[in-house]
Image (cartoon, rainbow, N blue to C red):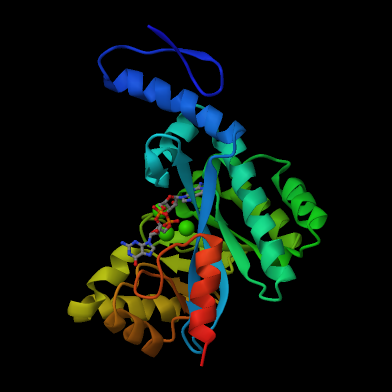
Length: 278
Ligand code: C2E
Ligand code: CA
Ligand code: CA
Ligand code: CA
């Protein structure tokens, strides 16, 4: 039977909810979601371990689906990539993240916002210029934005990746390598690419509390990053033990449920205010 979707398009809906059908419907829904502004960003604070201060947050996308509730990125990002919607989605995320950075600036509580970039969106040749324009119209500076890229992107085409990163960096935007350590990649890129920050993957941080060898490995990765002049950020800090160990090893910043889950901007403001209260 034919059914009207929110966007007004007719979509074919089978009576039994087989995989193909639900994927087709999700695709229609996602197209509509981009048009009707159903994407929301949550922000997770990055805590500077030496001081306890928060200078930046990571923006993480969610989809406020009209019938399914708040969907995590894992539920729709692969689909977005497969059906060619990632470019539009990323543009929307960047716009929202920068809007929020402008709000924080206006409030007198500036925070650098980090946005996740899939490899497919980074290879657009006009990306550096487009981002520079988005920053400029909001009266922000490049220091208000950070981009999180994956090792996968760095490995696909080294020369091209290098060119893109250099152009972004020339405009003052800082670059973080996400999920560091999971990519089976050569560490040589740290030597010749303009990387500001490594985000140590959760899988290294989780076993730290009860495995001395895992902790020693993390300590040496932090030392390696520092020897190359790169900041180290640990992800997936879920308990006080990991927090204390990472602080002891000189890790620069940490993110994790132990400090805060990703939160809507207003809730993050409340979290920050409570933290700074006497
Ligand atoms: P990621 O970039 O590695 O983001 C960190 C993920 O770990 C987030 O999941 C966050 O909620 C979760 N996390 C944070 N602290 C902890 C912790 O202490 N323990 C555990 N177990 N998890 C923690 P989320 O929000 O579901 O995002 C999943 C992935 O989706 C992200 O992984 C990122 O790869 C992708 N993603 C999210 N937003 C965007 C976006 O706007 N664009 C793109 N291209 N990818 C995005
Ligand atoms: Ca990330
Ligand atoms: Ca990560
Ligand atoms: Ca990831």
